[in-house]
Amino acid sequence: MLTDLKIFSGSANPQLARSICRTLGIGISRLEVSRFSNDNLFVKILENVREKDVFIVQPFTAPVGDTIMELFIILDALRSASARRITAVIPYFSYARSDKKDAPRISIAGRLMADLIRTAGASRVLTMDLHSDAVHGFFSVPVDHLTALPYFVEHFRKRLDLANAVVVATDAGGAKRAGRLAERLHLPMAIIDKRRLADTEVVQGLVVGEVKGRDAIIYEDEISTGGTLAASVKTLADAGVKSLHVGATHGVLCGLAVKRLVESSIESVAVTDTVRVPREKQAGKIQILSVAPLFAEAIRRIHTGESVGALFD
Ligand code: R5P
Image 1 (cartoon, rainbow, N blue to C red):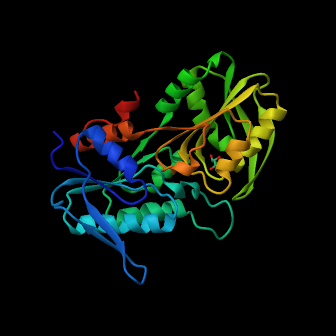
Image 2: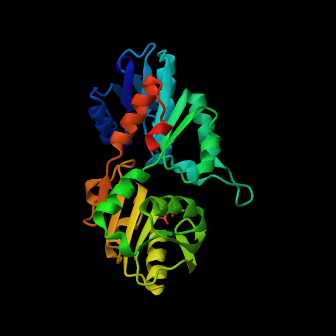
Image 3: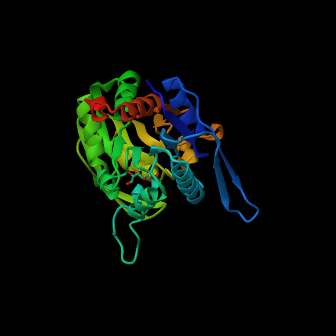
């Protein structure tokens, strides 16, 4: 049934690509990435892809510039090798954070990346939990936008007594996302008033909603430097929460993030494996949920022409 399907991986998260292949019961396809002495990247596809349905897994993780360039060159090599259809599987699309012109003379780089992915050779894109839903519209090729929400619903149901819980959005932009989790868990929600002053600096003010004496669940698209969470811990402690738990799809965990999480009063943190979390960053309170089965099923459905949306019914 999965004839003519091939899954390749770039160097960003081969573990996830291998888990997807294991779930589908197929071997991972082979390519070679190397560097010339002048630092140029070189890609060679090591098997025949002529007329095949090809998927290439590459989340945008650090070093992001190299990772993206590697994806472009792999896409181009696959196209030159006559693949029938090429899907760029980008479990974490980091440039989704550059989704608006909120200062003069800046680039909406998320839109630029979407254009370049198509130019490089992608016929479609498969991704997960974009920073904002509107980013989907940046692409002129078909996009399947998955969500890790079902994993977090199950995680919090198993892990917490939800009788006295509340789902918290750390800013107005995350309210829709937090609302979806609150709805699925049949919980109330609250929103923190947050302003980002710079990449690593956020300030928070009022909490809108009842949090006093409750077990708070913060639900985020990503944890990057952990600055938002550090500010939220303080805001929610001042507002009198009883305990604090976090769920975030993309565990980017850069800069001081792990230290901030470990030293904070947050009791548990769950992230998925869209971004590879190296062993040294896997602190005791950080749990990793694998979304490989969801990506595997979405790939199977794209390949066989079944509905991907029906996965979330
Ligand atoms: C912001 O709008 C996002 O939803 C996350 O809160 C943010 O990306 C996290 O970044 P950091 O961990 O650096 O505060």
